[in-house]
Image (tube, rainbow, N blue to C red):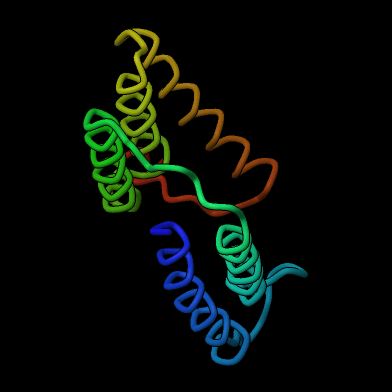
Length: 144
């Protein structure tokens, strides 16, 4: 029952967000066909559908989540907040390297493999976004 109550509250929040996305967000010009207005709209529709599915599906018998899982989830939230804060300052590559390394380490990788994953995610992700998608990502400390 708790998941349905949570989904109901979040559905109300999502509908309010969707109302703002469809009525208040307006860009003076668009770089691409989707434009900056479309993403909040798409996000609100998909999120509202997901919460509606949670409300309509049968209840799970219990939500027993072990304490270590809550700790890992809390650490991941802190890592995501740190990534968002450091993204502009350090740049995409360094921030993604740090986040990828720590997240992989938290999931059980050795330090060497975690660092390798973080480096590949940072560099390959940067090159894919900049060269293939032509996105303007922050370069931060690696401003070249």
